[in-house]
Length: 151
Image (cartoon, rainbow, N blue to C red; front, side, top):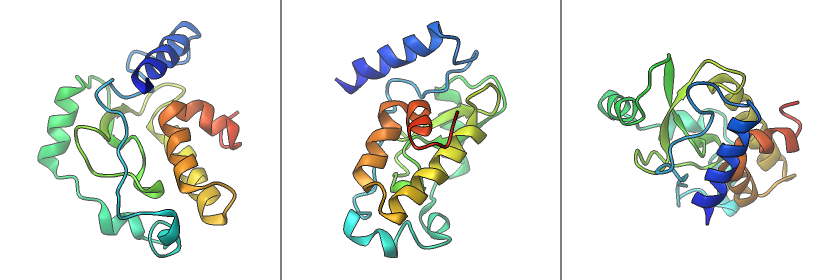
């Protein structure tokens, strides 16, 4: 069902002119994956700790090259976590990593703003971890607008 919703959302965004030559969304195979070690009960000792993501980031240069090739990246891109480490995403290269372009209205740096805002929402208690994860997976641009991180 998520794949259908994702495809419809991506198609609507394309029709509305929201994405450039490289989509603001990952390929259909990247559905978002979370780290089971991060739970609502332990967010204050995991994702809400300054520097947490550096302790769990584990994506080798080899994996990055594979992801860039798989996603046919043609523009300057980063290998990004669809569900960010900031909100308990995993390092799974098949389900949670994708080549995200820096260019366009909704490039990688814009998504970074949304990810940081979601972390603030979760760590302040204004949003649950699961709701933040579901929000970004459903449509990270709409999610950013919903929480006030994007216009």
